[in-house]
Image 1 (cartoon, rainbow, N blue to C red):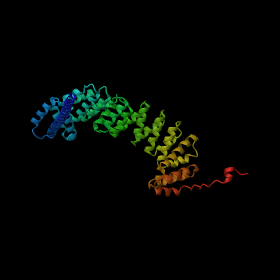
Image 2 (tube, rainbow, N blue to C red; image 1 turned 90 degrees about the vertical axis):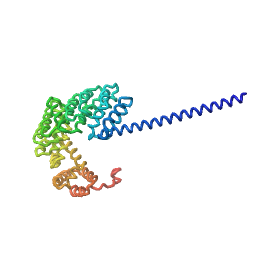
Image 3 (cartoon, rainbow, N blue to C red; image 1 turned 45 degrees about the horizontal axis):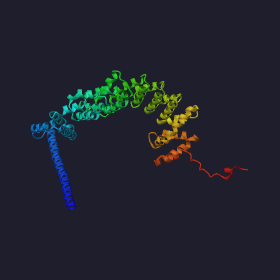
Image 4 (cartoon, one colour; image 1 turned 45 degrees about the vertical axis):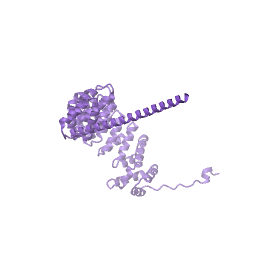
Length: 420
């Protein structure tokens, strides 16, 4: 009896195991078939969206079929397809894809997403609106530009610039003047990478309304017409804010005009040492006939940074190294330190040595090297720089101007232990 019972139980267990295996296999087959059907439907929907984007085929029937799908539980899938197709087709077909998204009532779905509780969902909605385009979404993007989350605000600014490039710069410039520095920096970079007359006009308008910041000075440099920018930058150098003056000085270095030179000359007496140091560097960049006296005067500045910048600026301009070398024997110790440091840097970086083989500057460079070689403390510096220079012509030119270093001798025993 016991044996029969065990046999029956074994058979039942085997039947149960077989049923479980068959059930699992059947479920896997159904899921695979379902995925194939879903993939096929997605593929067909994608083909339909592409055809509509390219304005091919029966648009009315295809749009009606997609609209029915988008109103059901496949709305997000249709939205993903439209977004992907918009990215693939590019700006050339943006208008038709935007019209399709509007016909499928997807834009309303996106606009509703701007109020989602999760910032990531709001960012995604804004980015897709920017991709699909459409100027009628400006109010919604304006609202998103005031979102509590900084990621949403930046994404909204990008989307606004993509959908309305003529009007967006004014709003974005106004926005960056009120944002935190790191966010304002991202917005400024966004405008700099999309240069247009509208951006320059927006920056000029903001300046006229009294907006001031170092970032706005940088925007003036990169986006405003040079003839207009010069006046705004000179205005920045007269600001009571030292940070603005520093930004203005740095920007003026790239505009070599009489007006900018005059402004920089006035700033060599600025109360802020940082402004004076930047002014000295800018004068060296301009290298005009009146800059040498201004830089020589700056060598007597009470701040080390200004003296060093002035000496470095002099070393970088024609005949400047000669002037600095001639001052070595006459200057006070703290000026001599600045001059020596600047000359050593100029030699070490190879600027003076490279000029030896430049037909335009060769004569000045030779004169400067001879002046430097007359000072024993500079001979070692010249030899070390020549040994590192990759140009054999430079090394050959220098060998005829600098005395050969004495060959070090081995110390004698008397030198080590002393004579008796």
